Length: 389
Image (cartoon, rainbow, N blue to C red; front, side, top):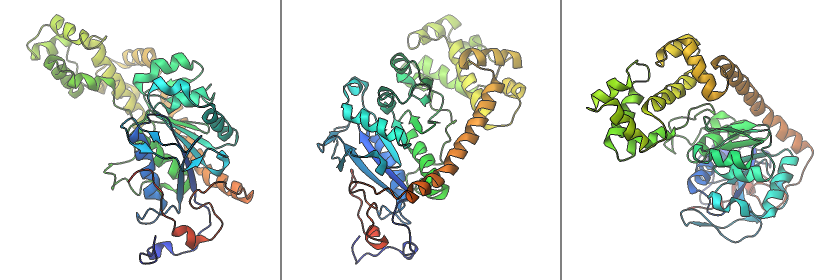
């Protein structure tokens, strides 16, 4: 920031020399731009009082084993700003994933860097297929992690000791966080920034990003059945839309087929051409998904949820819920409530953790903006050397 464009008055009060949150990005080959940009923009908006690109409350840096440009899936090249070095200079390491074809050929330096960060107690986040890198580093054994539904089968095969969640848009387990990528990276970033900088600062830029609101971890992500609504077969598309609009009704597949001027057999054959499931199984899965959302987001009884989601009675609902999710609705609700309390505690402990680290007077390494001890005013004048323009 030049002298001709001074910071607003709100930024002139004295602050500590350290940002509240320091993030190191590790971009994997052919990384996904939307995950990286979404997470970065939450940091950017939270970093200062306006939107002038000053890394005051948050600071970030792209690190890599070498300083050669990393090419994204869309062909955009991003140049790392520093070598990996000591991960202790960051509070959080964010791994942005790329296609699975290259996940087994990662430099050993990246895996070693992540292990050192984990041993130092740093928060490590995997975006999209970044969870495969965390798994390769041995950080997900015995942990619950959020994986994109398209990659869940391969992830389970590679890392059988991890617990896969495809029904959460992000997941925290200890000092490891994961999300399936896409816009879920924005929600994960908001939660992480909340822990270090406060909720108001974390959500400060959502309106500018045209994001309605921050979605919690237990928000139900889009289900693959959405693909059926644009599969090119008008019969399947219309049937899927009608199913989604009638989750609480008791219409039969025969009634649905009649609405489309088809027989139940014709509708079944149309569905089998696009999915391995029958229309009945698709409709039941939609109802279970909606029931699970209501279980986590309302205080309604299990009986009421069963009735309002199209199940014959509570025992019928409980049997199917246990078959699909491996536990009863009551157990799932109790575990989710406990997870919420645990995450709230982790966020509350984040500032205390930073204060402890500051008292140890660990001198940060590298040229991360805001890490120098040269005074508040000079740090306020530091431009963001952002990876994208």
